[in-house]
Length: 155
Image (cartoon, rainbow, N blue to C red; front, side):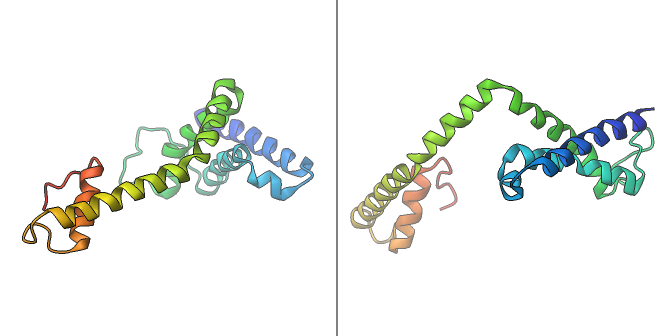
């Protein structure tokens, strides 16, 4: 049945992560690796399935009679199983390295954005009439809404 197949697959996932954990020389480094965390989270459904005896046959399973364990198994498990395959794609590793390199420049970008925001806040506070912009905080809010995609339609 499908329940037996699911439990068997999850049992092999659990055994794999357990063997890798036992064989790892550093337990701290094991849990610092994102792939190991994904694999560890991917083995949790086995405990949930066996603990609640969830079969997930789909016929009598509605949103009303599905508890938290059932919701995790139905919603998160397919995502976790797909995430387990990410380590096999070289393009993903390349994209991840590109994001890490781009994140190094992020503080500079945020700093420049803050400078521009402060300049426009001061400009709005000085240029706009007092009945339009009553305080410096209101000018900051107007500059923030103008610089982001939120807009200021509720003013």
